[in-house]
Image 1 (spheres, rainbow, N blue to C red):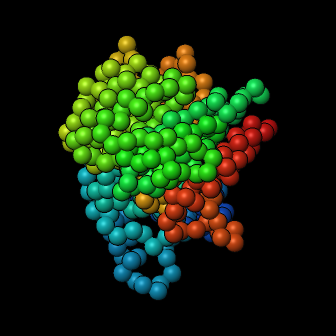
Image 2: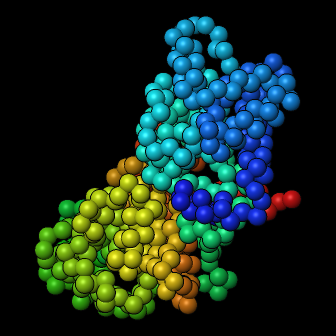
Image 3: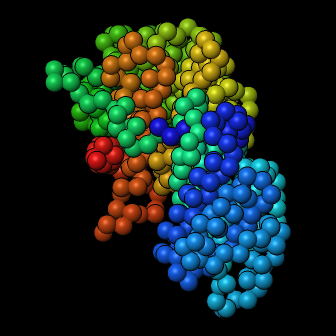
Length: 485
């Protein structure tokens, strides 16, 4: 996994580095120069404007300029205020040839929390050193920056490179290892290879009840939710899926043909839904059930008495907000999957701008694994005895997944992953599996192609289910490529 650290954490890591600042700056500047050369497609006759501030970020830019000049690039190094004036002049002459081939933003980096007047971007590509100046490195907030085509970040990712709008402003982000020890990071970015390693296939001795998933989802008004959960769980490896929808007879429950349905009459249905639950390896509750007080009470009872790993989603999250005591009775692993609105109902307010800290605090307060959905999905476990808790970030999805039913598909995938062998695993290992499931689901957005070109239209939830197998194969291929010499 790729480490993610806050600016405060990075300051401590810098201070503990065995080499001095000059050595670190030399390595960082060299990495910027190499990326600049790649972006320009060469060096001969190229021109670069370097906005270099007074701090270490500016020093990175000056080292990069020195290296580029040795390679034949004409570099102009200016202070940030002068860079803004030069860019404004270049933008005021539409149709004229750009005075540079590239602009290197080494103005302020992580040292700025506020605007520096970069309201209009340069007319040429921008390479940011560490982070685009004007992007809050902790929250991703944009105080005015030059959107970068590429960003070279040093030692570890910063949260602001993963949280929007900073993630969009950073362009393609590459990590340059410059000799810093980031092994103590408590936040990590999940890669394809990480997800592949965490996802387990069926054992040679597997049978249909080896990975059995119980689903309580859907209702007379929301029949499709349960169907999507079941289909996703089956496609993600569940051998047996049994579904009940409160208020529906088995014959009326929407489900894939391979899923088994059981009656769940209205009223006191929690007791019936718990019958035989010990035979299952994981369960899902919530999608499409409804949020009336009767349903909420029954959901809370199911959550508190269900003895197997459980995914709590959608309407069940509202029930937890009404009956928070139901979580305290659980002994098996529990995963809550809120979006921002559901997060507010669970915790009393929306996620803070520092979403990494927000999900970490929620997991600690609720005592369960929390998966906070969003353009960057975050998974956190409650604090360990040492007081630390790990946050895993997933960025594989795109805006194409912002469609009705997408969360139901994710719940099914997570449940299938939880239905694998989790007995004896600690919460960190279980949360890695949960994050891998989210990464797997997110990859469906980038493999749906038409004529070899990735589409841009919203991806229907049913299409996401159909693409899970292909997405899983891509994870395996990426992992194999990483292992090749």
